[in-house]
Length: 256
Image (cartoon, rainbow, N blue to C red):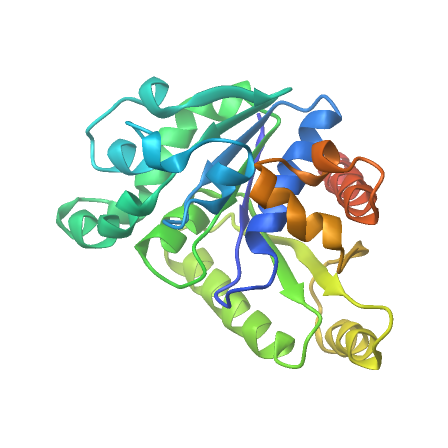
């Protein structure tokens, strides 16, 4: 059975979607069968793997509100060993519509239950806010991966996420665990990046990945070409970093 990992941070601009796209791509490059669930109405993970989100007839939104079956919105083999449940701006209406549903917090879980057996990893790219979509993702997940940017308010955003995770664990998903924290946008030229890393390590009892994702121009360019970094510039430091992170994620799976 595959691991379901929710990638979340309630603070925007921390490299959440970049991590979802590139970790998925590097896991699939390592011959792991991966499903990426784009659960953010911005749909950036969808366009980041080369799909034109505005032309999609069926997305995860139609799935949630019962207007399609999972096979109708699942995009298979967008890359080697990588499938995606895509998203677009329609998903922003789901929060209001889902209010009428019974078990509205566990809709995604009910759909992923049927897919679990076909994948080594299911990665969910959550919206950068605490809403019914994020709650659905955390209820469906086995673990939570938290990307945090190496900047001054990093700890503040991290504490918010950890509170949410603990609340969901208490009320909805008793098996939810913290996969770990990954540092993003690390700039070796600044003292601040180093200070943030040291501060989080000192104040946090959670797992912290050894791999640190650097600021990298090629990494920033890749989404505009609809490609993950390992395809856009395979030899870049961004690509190498996400390969190392994928290797760490796989090795942690062996320890579980």
